[in-house]
Length: 431
Image (cartoon, rainbow, N blue to C red; front, side):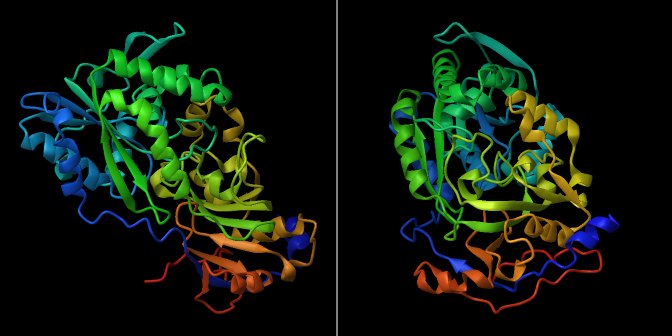
């Protein structure tokens, strides 16, 4: 790496300062989640299905959803209050390396443990063929879910990272992909993301018709990733109402207010932040060139992988340069299973690897059209694609920041400070 170091050592790094970004302030978070969930599930439409002695299966996915442990526990508590017999299953397709043990471990990382939620967690990759969808394709779902008396499909509604449609991430996708485990998810993905809008609807519709789905609990978050709304839908309402909730979720997507960057620095990616590791609706790093959204940056670097992702570095292909420390955490089998199931082999591709954060950033700057003019580079640094209320910007962006009423400068200009290993200190948020 000596020659590479010599090639990039003269790159000038600009000073950076922290700013706060302000988004939709009208999306006030829910204060009492258990109360809202109890109110939603106690509606007359659920009276006979979430009831005494009913075995109720509650889904829980692999995303880092705000308050997911409390939300899950609140559903369990309501079921127990009416005399039902709840249990939870991991509903995350192929995530967690497509093993029952790893999927349960993912839930535990989010605080969804049997001790906390107060009911069993049944984790299995075994699926059941419940029939065919309208196009004659076999539909599979989790065996425990199918054998229950009722399924509560709990999931966050938000724009997807790889396709657009009336149904993206949400209840229908939780049914079609999450409940399908690896095998069912692979069938739904087999025609690629260009057909996912249609297939999520067809598979989800078939599961509502043929499996004991009794409720869809939609989670909507505000731009600060706080729980903004919780809405319980009957099976008959899901297809009609979920697209309306997706519109609300779109209105609550945060954004990076700076565009046409030379470099975007992402401290960490991971499945807990986005199914794509880093949400391209924020970072612009879509696998499909026809997808649009997020910022435009000439180069993207990713410095590390979250521990919560359990080695799943899916989405690293969106970076131009990464670090050896991330690659050391890259679990090839876990990433490959996810990429094969989703029919996106390039999603597992590894970019150029640098020895440390310093080399990573310098290589990226050196390879932009700016070349050695790093002091003038338009750079944004984010902790991850989920938490962008506070970001670092380079000095070239200060005047834009001052003109934007949605931005507040909260720091002072400072040099990049690397430790002895050449790495940046962890991203620290204000109190």
